[in-house]
Image 1 (cartoon, rainbow, N blue to C red):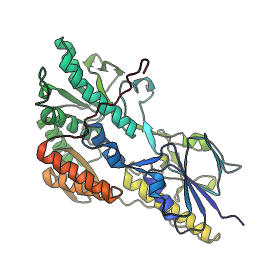
Image 2 (cartoon, rainbow, N blue to C red):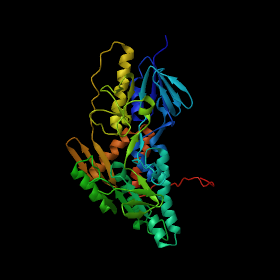
Image 3 (tube, one colour):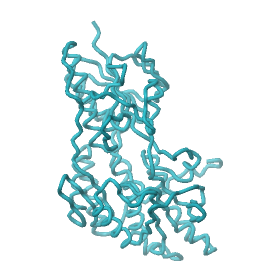
Image 4 (tube, rainbow, N blue to C red):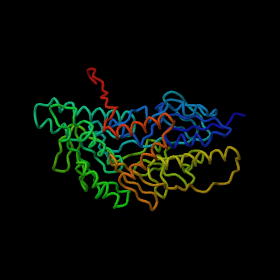
Length: 416
């Protein structure tokens, strides 16, 4: 008899944890992803702001799973899933399965205005990060050459839409680039005159944090020179600026951090989904009507909301893998207790020596919060080399105010 086949779609935090939970299971595990690498998404903003290089937060999936003998890796994009035949159809291969784990994460949501994407890229992949990095750095370069004051002002205006952790971290990092890193590098402009705006539709930034931490973050950003506009809705986005109702802000460096939506996984399965496209799953993370299919991470939603952060995806992936392993080992295994998420805390860095941290009743701010944030992120990086590289890069940047990954990467061929 052939061994059970488990297909895991997505090599993010949830998918990899599911694969690891099955490492001792007598089954054939196949992990399929459209990228050949796993990305540590919490530090993507540091790639986008030239703090670290892409290779510092990305690892080949094959390398991560090379010692897991029952796991293989396939590069491909999912086209459809035949739930009757139990086959996953990708652009490169069709994979039969006995159990299926969907961990495809989320992408940017422009709330029905998908045409805004080219003008205001989001931050979910390394490609997004390098695109934003080039756009930010190129704005300074073009401002150096601008002859018209209005052009120079537009080029030195940076707009971040969305006041969650990603928006706050991006705003603080761009402010540091302008006020510290680049201040002596140009001859015709003063980067310190750059205007950085953080626009949030809600009444305050970092809405998931306690009000006192949100207020601290706002105060810190304003001290860094960031303009914060709350209770402000973006009504239009174009390549040369954003509209806020009747008001307009001219800018060619716009970053979207305002919303996300799930992958098309619910459409592949014909499953019920919420407004963000996340599959409504049972307590054991299985898809209703399909006990052999599990959805984890940002792909899934439960009756009790679970935050879309890496620890949640990892816990869900491990739980789904454990349930599958138990069923393979014993077909008559009892139904496991429903998945229960354990929230470890919330963290967001604001800039140099400043961060906000909430761990149950413990709240940290300032340098202590920043130090805790730094240690936590280094700890969760994969591989000793990456941990040492990022730690040394942060230490060097802290002492010298310099950023070594200031690369403008773009395709200069005609038509690109």
